[in-house]
Length: 158
Image (cartoon, rainbow, N blue to C red; front, top):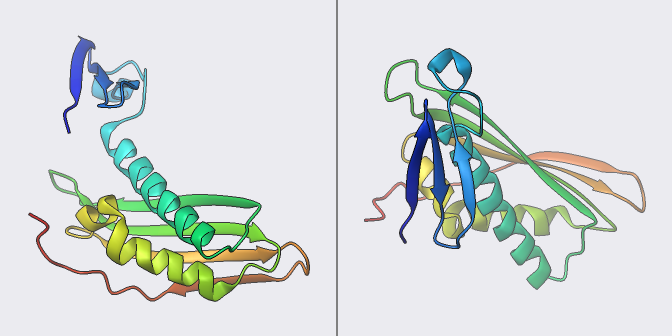
């Protein structure tokens, strides 16, 4: 994989992904930027949300577990000292579906966290990651919220 970033001035860069998609990254005004785009660490969190979300969608689809809406919220804490890595993350999956099974949702989240999501695997090296979900059944209106017990591997992926 190969990415390319070009300096635009101030603190801004235009980055080009291997897929050809472009994004501007910048710092906020207090750090010398012009707030032209997301911060690099914000992109890491967005990458985590997208990576685990794609895994969960794929797994639920293979299990024929239908859902009508799905969103992911990631809360993060960072170290007070540089390099200010993430130290704690809460990944909250919120799904709505007709008769969607909590066991299917938990399995999908667990497989993403322990086997498939490479972003999660990298972040797990510096941060404790808690996965939880809220599931609302469209048919009954019943809501279930749980923390998913995950034992991710703590090994080098090098």
